[in-house]
Length: 90
Image 1 (cartoon, one colour):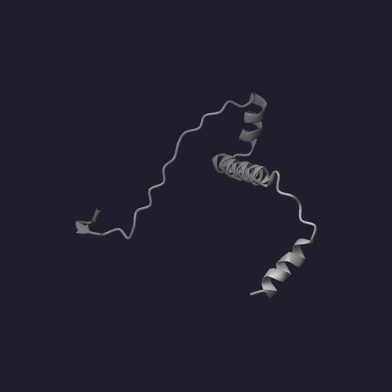
Image 2 (cartoon, helix red, strand yellow):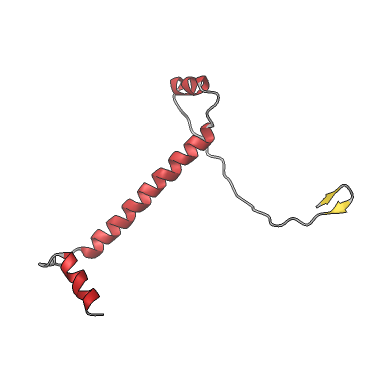
């Protein structure tokens, strides 16, 4: 990078890719959004999508765990007792 005829080496480059997501919303919703000009709607929507994706990923993991536990009989002992026995046996 050249600045004022002198070479400056950047410390690092961070390349963040992005995609365009176009959605259609009801006219009333868009008009209400326009009333709040100070809101960064892109950031709000991105934040919502991130939270929702985390929820969906968690649901997928829970379903996988539930499926893996199908057919495994429930223990007759409380979990705390088993944990204590394992710790004391070390």
